[in-house]
Length: 507
Image (cartoon, rainbow, N blue to C red; front, side):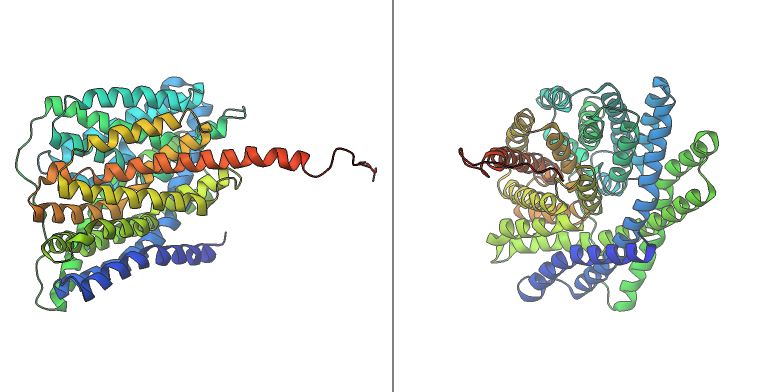
């Protein structure tokens, strides 16, 4: 696709994604729930930055991270050296996770675990599970059996974990598979699977995101046995009030360099690793290398705009809005409002578009992008409703995730393996930047207003968003399979009667 056409397509996607949630929040604040004018203006500016950031990030992801993942995956597999595949996979998984913006947002909001400790723990968890992913592809290990073992260990450990660590652990599994990690990991899987010549190779390239979501949960659970953090309660840093528009502009200008440094520092390890690999092994031609470099620049600028808009414009308003709804006569709308926002907010997640497009291409159109999008919207809407119910009642997250994952794992033995892998991958990408930067602060604000425990009741929202697609996508797969099997006899037998004469003419 020509670059101009690519920009036009991505711009349409970004506007269609961000506009619905912006209009919903704006209508709510202008008609029912009063908020400070500067917060509202910051939110609108943030929406524009989100659109611009999504466009640049999506274009950059297509031309850089996906290409890097595919090239490196194919090259290291062709070496036929198992130790090299294991070592490179671990390093890639660890480095790419440290650059994940969702993880940074979550780690910053968790008060009782040091930010650096949490990021390193989660990154190592992803690195180890990415090694497991590569071994699964190479040795054709069934995904559902592997998931059953890992989740069995996970729920066994959860019996011994305290409430504060438990919710954060499950949230960690959701935030690690965001706009930076997903394109790279999925492309890496396709590259590794390409070395196999059997018919199931493409199917096994799915499921990487699923396994990489389990690693951080287990890693944080294990951390809780050795790390004793501060028991202080969560405090969310609200944006200061601004007397006029110039002060608001300075707030954005002050935040912009900080996120430039954050994105640059986060991307530096993976970029350095790629160039070392390029010199030693890849040796891509100059034109291809230049295209990847330009794509990396787009990715950096896009993520910088996205994070600035989301954190400065979205997070503060989300926290305030959640608290003010509880304090208003309209508190009864908390659950349905969250469900409506969840329905639309999934469209604003950049990684979702990467996954749905890749699924449609690799399934040759059998699983359409539209069908995937619908199933994810239903899943996230339901997850947001359950999250707000937890905020209002204080129900433990285990009452939701234990039966939820039990149903998802049971379905994995019924539906075709491709749908299981895609479903578990979808769970990882559904919980992206807007979930962490708007809906989580929204839940934290509401939880603080009702006097609940923010660490155990508000955290866990990302985990539920990551869990529900596991069920809805597999149900979609089961329905699709049933319909195709029911239609097959009709197509074969229904065209002719028992006594019809069929004439075959040779042309």
